[in-house]
Length: 355
Length: 224
Figure 1 (cartoon, each protein chain N blue to C red):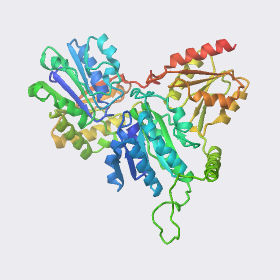
Figure 2: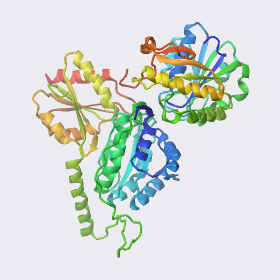
Figure 3: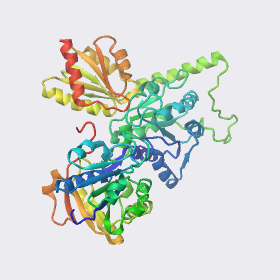
Figure 4: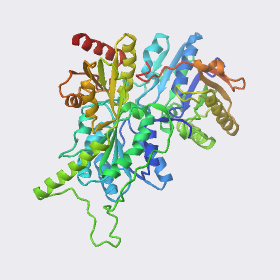
């Protein structure tokens, strides 16, 4: 198939259709509105169901219901709307149901603004709702990668019976890029024998539940979840390493910021400074080992996490590096985007100090 | 460009590159010495709107008008009363950049009685690489929905078939074929073919309409 020009939000929606998603429940918010708009057009064409819910809370609970019945289902929103969905997300995680949630992040806190941001990293990766749980978080840096990751997200969700989140900054939703939809390698997936679709000759009902009144039973359920999370951590880490060989400074950046950092790396190279980048593609599970390995490289003097936030992923970088090398942070927030020039300055300041 | 009517309304699907066309077109007008104004009527796209390069317009002496509420990232479809000035004052050459769908075109419909039929051209910018307007039927459906929303008739087509930085001559030719099909059915001329300056020497001879070589102004942060 030839390349076409896609807007990020549309590509995310089309990728979901291609992955077999037939149910979408959502509520509008900028900058992700083209996702529900596109789904409202496409889902009826493929025999699916699009429903604009009365609120984000309603939408995520519709997702809960459809997921419980074994359907491929998605919802999307942006930061304030994702906050509203958190109760539903923790219920879905607890009930071990697969679904895909898209967050096209905008500036916060509160209503914030509509320009791109990465300040929902904590919310996405540390469990935005209550209780001990994890969701898989995928952070594309281009529309092409978004199109691929969305398709894989449905497989990951089904394989582990767990919510998967696509975390894109608003830029990923709003910009246009060439995309080629290719067959994404399908995984061998277990049959959904747990789905609540009627007895079908079985003796016992399947039950969707997240209530565990007996503390011993509840603890056991937590342990079961965490055994599953350990499995995900072992199997599902995605990361890009860029220019690490001989790097004096290693950047940590994800999403579109990683592309700005790559420009800064070229600019540094022109000034004779070698810099590299570790770009986590899965924010959870976090590629801790890649950072630790880089920290052990003798040429690496320091790490610099660049984010569109006040400093969130930097904490995971620190945890991963385990104090072996100093970890610094540079960020812009509230919808402001870091420039390559400012990143170069920051790196030079750090290296000057480290010498 | 001189032959176009005083008010140039630029429409098209979002992603057709209509804003890039509008910006380059406006700069060209100003370069030719005209008293020029651009109206950013885009109330549907929150990012990559012509108002983002406000200073570039002002430096070139172009009057730029957008929301009555200042600030780039307003999510409020508030239109400025200044728009009347450049519609009514015939000393202005006016370019109107309209939002990329029927809802966006509705903002233009509000000025229906202020735009004289003999005083405007409405261009429909087509990009054959945009999946929602990639064939004759869907492109015409889209064109008609924009006419409906704006309560104005398209007067000419613009072939702006591109793939961002990966555009090849074949893309432009493919777009021309689509434009010809739409042209035939709708009885509309192809008035411009847009091409990035870097490709200008590779264009074949059989290009329809005037060739508008463009620079890219709406850049992504890693393209700066």
